[in-house]
Image (cartoon, rainbow, N blue to C red):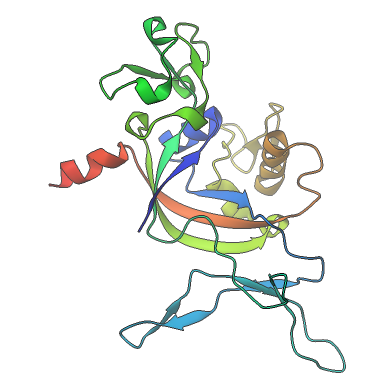
Amino acid sequence: MTDRPILFSAPMVRALLEGRKSQTRRVLKPQPPEWAKFCQQPTMLNALQQWVPSGLWAWSEEEQSPPRPLRRWPVNADGEHYWLRPRFSIGDRLYVREHWRTASVHDKTPPRDLHSKTIVEYVADNDNLTVGKFRQGMHMPRWASRLTLIVTDVRVERLQDISEADAIAEGIEQSAKFPDRYLTPAGDYAVPKVAYQRLWENINGAGSWEANPWVAAYTFTVIKQNIDQIEKVAA
């Protein structure tokens, strides 16, 4: 188990707070070569002589005709195989970073010099806040985070392979008028996968869906507490 930060935009933070979001997809870097057709996670023997998921992934291509050994990727400069590990693993605790503000008196104070008693305003709660300096989520200190995610599943897949159910789990907002339609960034409604496609393009830019990159799909549970307060409450 490792503690790591993860960044979300204001709309996605609202989806977490409202219980609509339990998955996130992040582009894998580097991407495998074009010949990679599927991705698999090998199992490894642990100290208890049990075969368990390794947390490591490799890409292969389908067998050719006539048959020949599968190629695997990634390989290093010497042509030797190595495994790729997604950024997060099952059991990791992720503290959410989001856009934030502090009182105007702290405008010239860098985040590292603020302390845990500093009052924090979260942009996701009020996009119209104008008091105090706007601060990027990437600069949010651990103590200021109010959401913790516990990773429960990791998959590696192509972006466009997302299912309708997984698109909904990404936090798209359901229409109150049309239960089978979901809100897009343009303000109209579409079926889940199309709504998620438009959300992805809104975040990652034109052509990003068509590129169909390999992504790590993380499933998680949401705890509405600071990561360092969870253990204190449990104790």
